[in-house]
Image 1 (cartoon, rainbow, N blue to C red):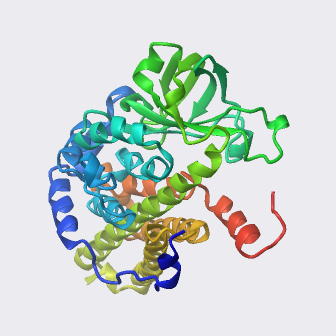
Image 2 (cartoon, rainbow, N blue to C red):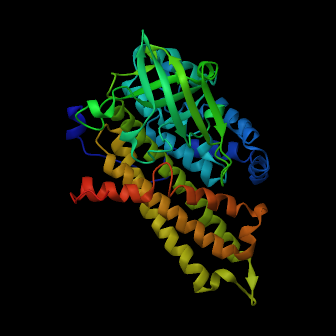
Image 3 (cartoon, rainbow, N blue to C red):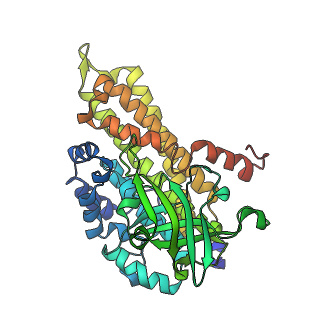
Amino acid sequence: MNQNMVDEPLTMSLEEDYSDIREQVAKLCERFPGEYWRNLEKQPPSASYPTEFIEALTDGGYLAALIPEEYGGAGLPVRGGAVILETINRMGCSAAAGHAQMYTMGTILRHGSKEQKAKFLPKLASGELRLQAFGVTEPTTGSDTTQLKTRAERQGNGYLLNGQKVWTSRAAHSDLMLLLARTTPADQVKKRTHGISTFLIDLREAQNNGCTITPIDAMINHNTTEVFFDNVPIPGDALIGEEGKGFRYILDGMNAERCLTASESIGSGRYFVEKSVNYSSERIVFNRPIGQNQGIQFPIAKAYAQLEAAELMVRKATAMFDAGLACGGEANMARLLAAEAAWECGEACMTTYGGFAFAREYDIERKWRDARLSRTAPISSNLILSYIGEHILGMPRSY
């Protein structure tokens, strides 16, 4: 760690930072109103990806925000990426369609080789390649990542990949995948986190050599899939860093993921609050605005207060990540508080709109479903609580 980072005080903005980016992203999102997203949900899983939206973000350079300038990106810190994703969700769009290309940078930039960066980052920045798939979760292991069953066994100068991933969103719309696989059997390592490696694989080649991607028809349109690997050969230079140390590498990606997806939840919360305030001020029942009633007004106010508090933790976590400081606790707490706050904002909005909240044309129920997902994925609120209890408070392990 840089000694200057330790000596210098941590600073974070409390203002509406990156105002130019917020304005530009908001204008881009105006081209993709609620009708665009509702129509995508009517399509089968194979045809429901927001390709036009992702292309617009790519053309604007927003998905290359965290890629260093020397490789064609904007070279922004994670906070800059967080603002982009927050604004997308605040405008009623879906940041999840493109966020993986940001949070995977935490692993690639810190642990990828010079050759890997030179090979892939310029093409990712230009949009020639798309990295939107993060292969971690498996059907039989769930949140216990150290017990994953996908294996990458040495074969010549490369590896032979076998196993299965599930809830791998956007795999069918990605050229590359950041993949976690076990390279040393669990019974041959001293610690459960050892013997796991990280790979950056070419899904186009993999699908021609034993990889199958199957869409999952889910409650929300996140284009999620199951991915099967049946004796898929992958080259040795797909390995990120050292063999067997991939779990540690992936944590950098996960901390970035926590910060970025927490920002998405802040954006969703602001969407709900704005909708609730406007509707409750305009909707007249019993000759008065419904927002005049404490039963409507107070839940909105309480959810807003929770959202403001959550945003402070999000800003702290991203500031620590960008300063190169250990931020596992802060990133996880930011994710927890933001997800819970967005959910409370969504609940208040559903109550405010009443029966109309269930009409698809209002978009409330679509965003409400997204808010509910954020309490479960990419990490569940309960798993974060167990982390806080054990690793921050020093309590006995709860599972």
